[in-house]
Image (cartoon, rainbow, N blue to C red; front, side, top):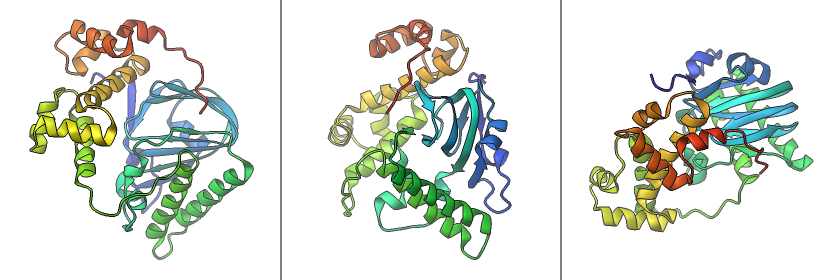
Length: 297
C-alpha cells in the first residue's frame, strides 16, 4: 500500500462499547493517545471531536498546524490526515462517531438531519468565552451520561445529544444561515458531484467524466457548480487532488514518483507541473516548507 506512513483507524479497532461498537465511542484523551501515538500519522474512517480541558502540544490536520490549549476543541473529518507533537499533561475527552450514527435519528431540518452540516466544519475552536465553553462541556456530559446508561432508547437519545453538541460546535465557528425547506435539485446535484469527486479524483480528472456519471452535460455541471460553489467543476476536482497531494507530502515519506503514481498521474513530471501550477511550489519545495507557524482561528 502506498500510504504506508499513514495508519487508518476504524471504530471496531478502538471501540469498547458493547452495543455501539463501530458507531459511537467516547474515550478519555489518555486512552486515545495510547492508540494514536505521538509523532505518528493517522486517518480515520469516522468523525473525531477532541475536547481538551488541560494540557499543551500541537495537532496537525492536513496542512494546518494548531496549538493545543486548555479548553480547546478540535474536529477531524473523515480521511483527514493528522498527527500530534509535543503532547504534555493533556486531559479531556475524545468522541468518535460515524456518519450512519449521526444520521440515525431523522428530523425535518436539513442542518440537523444530515451529516452534510459537518462537511466544511472548522477544525479548531479556541478562545471561547467561559459561558460558551461551559455550554459545550454540559452538552458533552449529557451525551456521555446517555452513552454510559444503556437505558431504554439510549441510542436514539445519544444521537440527539450528539446532534445538539455538534450544532453548538457549528454555532461557535460560523453563523448558521437559513436553509430552504423546498427540494433543491441543484444542491443535490452539487452534493452528488462533490461526493463523486471525493471518491474518484485519482482516476477521473476531467469535468466531462463526472458529467457522464451524472447523466448531464459538462456545461450544465459547470453552471450548477459555479452557482452553488462559486468555482468550476474542474477546480473542485483539482482542489481534491491537491489536498491529497499535500497530505501525502506532509504526512508520509513517499517519494514524489510514488505520490504521483498514487494520485493517478502518468509520471512524476506531469504531477510536478500540475502541483506547481496550483501551489506555486514544486512538490519537493512544498515538502521542505513542512514546518509552519501555528494557525490560530
